[in-house]
Image (cartoon, rainbow, N blue to C red; front, side):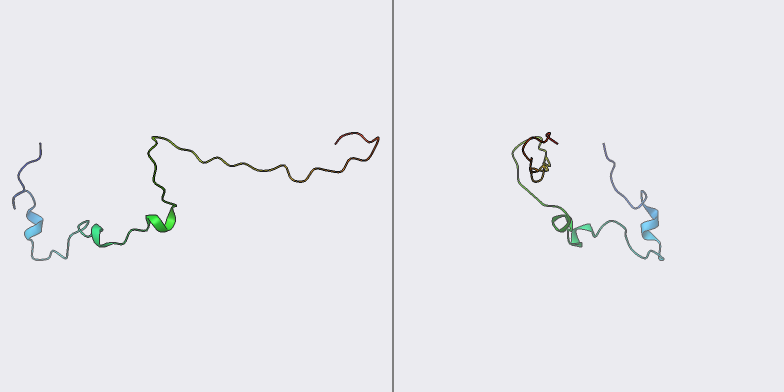
Length: 68
């Protein structure tokens, strides 16, 4: 259970040399997640994206030659 926040809990907040607070302006920073990742909606608990590579073009087999 959290305690009551008082000036006694954070005495450095009352110092005259306090330059600012750290971690209180995160809401003002623009999110970069949508610029880095592809965002998709889903109703599933788990999803994967699989990669599939083709075999390329089939080689030409001349008559009476072995299969390569």
